[in-house]
Length: 417
Ligand code: FES
Ligand SMILES: [Fe+2]
Image 1 (spheres, rainbow, N blue to C red):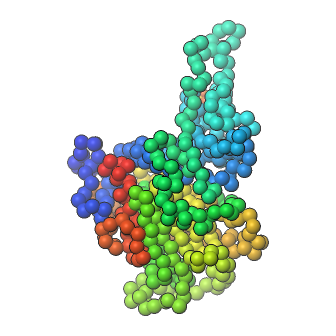
Image 2 (spheres, protein in one colour):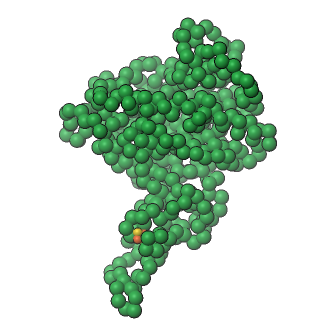
């Protein structure tokens, strides 16, 4: 960990001058910042994506997940309600549930000393509670109801399950804002979701560098050779940038419009403006799915959730911080129950656009590491976020870093920085 010099009264270094246009590199490096994020962001007043309702088809279905670095279990109980609680035994703290998903008949039993919990996460059994032959056991004063893993409040929206540890988090739809709710609805509402694939991608960088990257509509058609060369996303296509809530949620969208190709890209001399051709162009032949004609929508909810629609490739991504300099990115590739076999094949084919080895997004897996390595000796220097001005507002232009400024605005509010 690289330490800068002066700390303020809060124990954190001072944020630089320059409003939302400056971000200090120490924020990607320090272990004390990481610890404060766990407390104020991940266990603070924010909603966190946990899993899909489709992951919990019936009573007892569960999925394990993370809220920041805290492990959690999400489960459908016998009343059909979705519950979530820490994946932490109340005895000595072992993981309660060791699988990624499955079906729990009655509840969960810790392997270490056999304490058991019902589907709502209530402790309901302690092995040898009364000891053996009148000897040992727990004192009479021990009450099981005093010892439960912490529970999360739960809210579902169009098949996405969110949770929060904080009583102060406003209702989910209010916290997201209507434009974000609408952006989720246009991809997911009223459809039966089918998980086509899942994988976890290890990123060699702080989690916020990946979140910045997803919100960064400026880089997309510059860094990604595939995006521009195969005409999926150019900054001159009709589209826009929506920044919502406390600033931390965003949507970037565009409509593919090959008639709009112009000279702007060749003048910039970008690596992404190349003469490459696809041998198999069927990769890009999708079907008309969205009546509004939007062919690309990237939506984030603060702090770590991404909903992606790139043509017919639908996915959700969950950013899971592992340390100040390590992150896991959990991908879930989605289809819908009423997809025809041909449509399903298109989705699977187009799923190759993204992911760790995706034609588009493999570069995103390494640029965060380039930044982490680039700033190693410069904790007191700052990133410059002046593209598109100094504010965190929605705009028609995607040549803008407004989405990033919005993230930092909400982040600093929660972190008290
Ligand atoms: S740690 Fe779970 S029963 Fe002991
Ligand atoms: Fe990217």
